[in-house]
Amino acid sequence: MRKRLPYLVITFDTTTFAMQMEKIALEAGKKGRLIPLPTQISAGCGLAFCVNGYSEELKGEWQEFCQKNIIKYREICEVWL
Image (tube, rainbow, N blue to C red):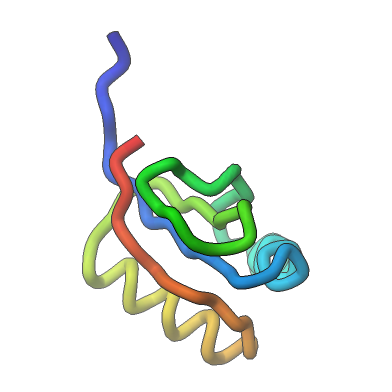
């Protein structure tokens, strides 16, 4: 059985915003990837950006990154996958 781990998940209202996040994060050298929206989250466009690990500090870094790059996200949350 695989051990579940915490991940930082960023959700979006549209697929366009999700794809914009992936492109800008990749260009900035940030680690993360697009995933199907986890079943624990019931809102959004069906895609989410996932980053390994979770902490309040990491959450703050990603909020700042999104604000700096004008990325419209819906929510940043912790999800166990």
